[in-house]
Image (cartoon, rainbow, N blue to C red; front, side, top):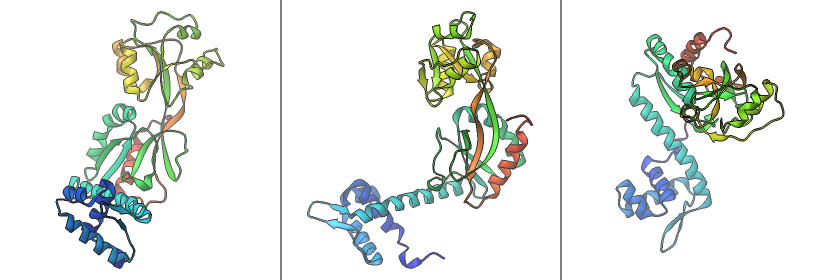
Length: 296
């Protein structure tokens, strides 16, 4: 049961949060379409309810006490959660929303083409997709699950392995001449992800040229790096599943040798300590059925 005695009113919460963020009662009043006096009354009522001082008052401005500033950080997270819950309800008033964080390249090239099959099988579930490039704290987010690349190193998460990558060295045909050895790639500009700066060294070692870590232009996403390679900026190591169409159309060509396995893998991850909702159970079971037997 929620202790209602210490549960403040929404106007009081909004007033305190706005004063903390804007730095003054007048700015908070303008934002909330209230008078400055109404803001002051909300803060006074809030202090009376809690029995603690929230505001340090002087002639020129209102300033929150250090404890109230900490309290506001918690309030802000709670208000964001309430707002997200309301958006989810509006998007799917019959229930069944799944909020999924995805990696952009995997989401666009692997997941999105398959989602229509999930929607046909589970019309009661609305999948909401948002891009995240790095792991985050599930406790402070609205996400039910995420697509993760790496290893099983996400604290507090459960995992469903999805696939491992085959990394292929490619370049635009206008840039690349036939290579006699893997070392010949070093005569070309190299492109790589900023999160995977050891890949070219691994590729060279796999093809008989160990102990190298060549310099390369850095990108934060495969999509941008792929376009740079297509337009002749340099040679790139790209997962084969992302560039099948570009290889078939001749926009990119293999540089040298076969693909190598990536160090990490793709996973569906979700918080272990949160009660599991039916949309996630349905999505995970469907996703497992989409995987080939030898995906990892």
